[in-house]
Length: 148
Image 1: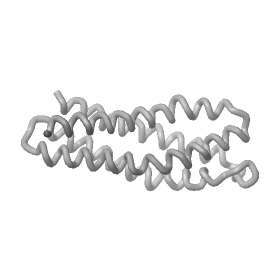
Image 2: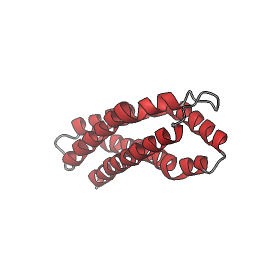
Image 3: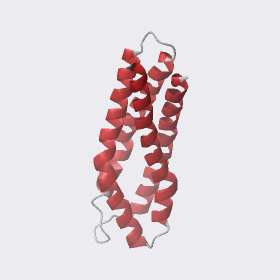
């Protein structure tokens, strides 16, 4: 039963990492190559769509990792799992404090109501997102190492 939980958790976290990596290194560069109005509209739409899904995914991933840590407390690799949980907590805190406030504003913007500094705000979101991606990649790596 524990090995099933380990695999499911690793897959769920790995898929989350893949989505966030894709946002940072595939989708945002595509959006940024679009003309200004289309660029901003694509970012707003992406913020609405992923803003609805990702909180559940982040919290669900954290819960799965916590259950793995508790269920496997006396097994080898638990320290790696606990550290991964700590990193996922950091990613959730970063999201709530840094990324979500910018995203909540950005997803309501249109070409008619966006602020003059909207590009700077998106660039700030991207910088925070790069750090968050690094944090969740580290957490995923620890989970994979704990499987061995």
